[in-house]
Length: 296
Image (cartoon, rainbow, N blue to C red; front, side):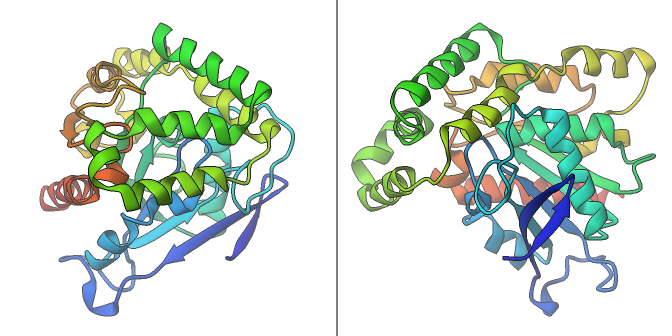
């Protein structure tokens, strides 16, 4: 995979191109629209295997990349913060000369995306934000998630990162997934067992979701009469799995309420809805992008 030098580290990325005949209606082939996909905790760019083909088939370019600490990207000493990972993203986009993009972040990726939208709004970042989709994420963790993350930290240090991820798998999918889709379950479990991530890198990323809190920043935007990300509120969507218990749906709904005018939608499944029910997830995202395009 290609790499880029970003903030004194090396970031691994893939820029996927659609078939030339699949440009979205109204999109100039000379200036294609790109969807930037931002991964969650301990997830590499392979997270998006079930999304990338659907987005390409709809005519979009797709940028996937490994956050610092995972995959083929450097894993310097931490802890990491959402501001640092948002800076990594901004420098990567600048390096790749991506001038405008739709953004989709899931879980920790949704937190990185909030930080990006707050720090690099469309109006003055040099990169036009076409839309923002914040999936399965929150504005702050609250007591339940904070306790869960503290347990993950303890498990990673006393057991292993792989053991933590095996536990996460139990809560990311719906109960029927474990009884009716055994081949997929085995594949997920193999991926968890083979995860190549050190305890140090895991804890560095974990710090991002433990410390993330955008409540005050979002409140100030509202008080100042400014748009989140510098874009019209209708171009912001908060998306949640209806049965998400890792990041409870109530937290995602609260996030949507803090962004005045943002859309709130749910899809089938829990925290792993993008993997367990990719058709529902993908169509909801693509439908939202069509809405953004049709309304100018």
